[in-house]
Image (cartoon, rainbow, N blue to C red; front, side):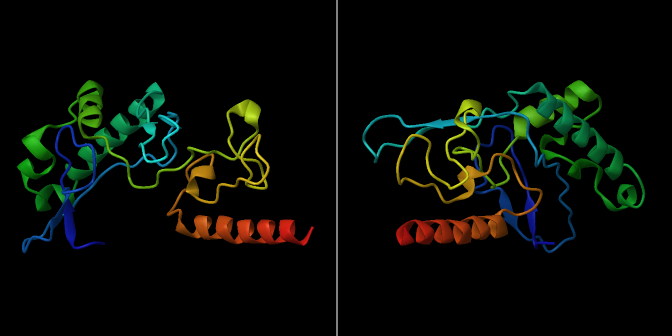
Length: 186
């Protein structure tokens, strides 16, 4: 539990400013998070200039199943807040900004489209998979087609982990250190 409130306005594109300081009154924030998205985005270099930002397009909701899952989560949240003990504890207008409700599946889909954001764990832009499957690095963390270029961060995860990625990043870094040391000994 964090002493803050999360408000996602229509069209938000980043988390900055969404975490409001705690209110002296009681509050609760309920949200749906899809940890295992079926949509796949991309990250590509824009030019040979390393200072130029890459082209990054997460392609959120490009797979219709993601929208369906999140919309149904949103409908479930509506059910939860209308059920005791929540129903008598929550203000009727406090469910969503602008008072929009997930009255049916289409309304829930509209809410998802308007308020969708990343939940911080951006991964997979350099997935560890075979090159034929659009992977970028091999099991030794080397970039396909290079000799000694490795990627050692969360971008190698081909899929989102269920929880926080920090421990997995540490494990990748420890493994990379062993692989690099092993290469020096040869």
